[in-house]
Image (cartoon, rainbow, N blue to C red; front, side):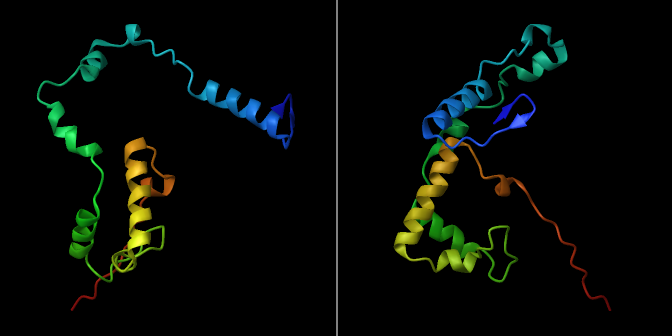
Length: 133
């Protein structure tokens, strides 16, 4: 926490709660969006699109079931490069029932909240030269 130019580490649990409340109240305050000052071009962008049907999104908040999870893993290529997590498709497909259940609970909670881990938003591209004749 900053007070003036000095930074202080808060350790008192009650003070931590107070400062946390202040932080989130500020972070999620009502924004001054100034839509009334938006150009006509951008106003059109924000209008609902008639060609997009709301029922297309009905299945998006449905939980991923274990059968769908297993079927998706069965179609994944083996031996592919690991992602940032270091977890391979093979490891996921060999996970036991308890680990699979917990992983699906986590994934479904993330999808429902729409708050994704930062590492899920980052991709790494590594050029791999191919042998030529």
